[in-house]
Image (cartoon, rainbow, N blue to C red; front, side, top):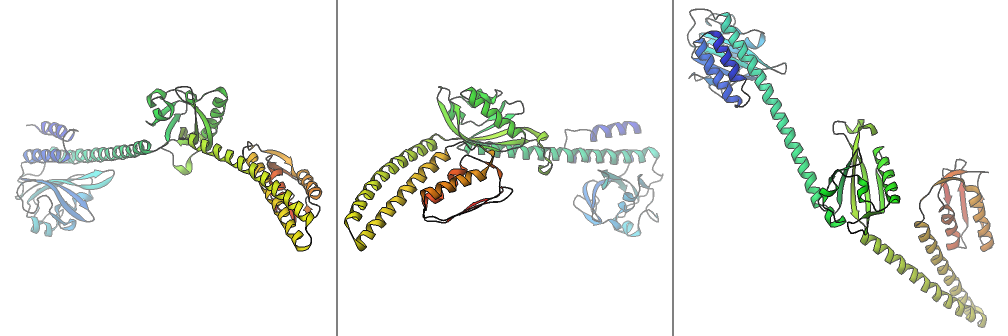
Length: 445
């Protein structure tokens, strides 16, 4: 066969993407032995100054798979130092091969080329015979060995790439499986909405919460879960906030069940960033959607309502009973003298204090339900007005107030209640309200 025919076979062998790399190298070594007319072919891996035989053809006992030796004692020592193949017609006395190598391996003829993978020396592909050659290796034979080394390097790079892709795919599948199992095991409903505002994922327990299977929502706008236009507007604001980089939490948000009933849920919605952007480099421009956790809050809402009702009933009955106790205590005080009248006074004071605490608790509950609207206001007049009310209601109390002329601050309507509750609960306490000039701190003691 002509040299070009052998080269074409070599292309076919090492260019085969379906066979294993080991079988491709074995076929290439057999082809090289046949073409070059030698008895030995071997493929090496060179690391940390050591040559290791990976595959071989021939029965040389020192050139079998797994055999190693220091690179300095190998025929390949010079091969890895030069760009072109090293061809030695007669190794005995050749300056290209060390005497130690000749004595150790006893090879008469040798030709080998360096295998390069990602610009680094990987190893060599070599052919040899125990006897010297009568003629020097031809240019075509050198080109064949060089071609074999180059194609082997490309095959190794392809194998490395495919292994990396397979490992990445395995990791992705594992992460997806972990994510799926977490979603399936969770008591919460997990949803994902893309940058167009449409559902791209929803966990399978959707049917239990909203009456529709999860597939029904896919590719529908997120507003499909909502009962009315007011809720749609609120949900759009949440979506816009998350798409700008915020994490939003909402309690007692209304969704709509398939049968038309409202389903009250708690929401936690976070931005979903592109996976190719490192966390420290993320910006709102890298957000590709939002991910939300939805928790059924109906039982919690019912429990909270029941507790509030019970609290109201308890406070109402408590105030009535305290008024009765206070009334009888006043009657006793009017009829008693000395120490006994003093005891009656203590009963009156205690009932007044408990009544005040009950009133304070009612006002706190009312303010908890007030929407947390925050506006810029001058809080100095608020504090001064409350101090005047304290002076009027508790003339025995001492009030010391220190404020600037004005103090603008971002405040909610609950501020006045927060300050007023303290003196109402403890009418004999000295009250200190301090507001600094920047209104950044308000202290009530």
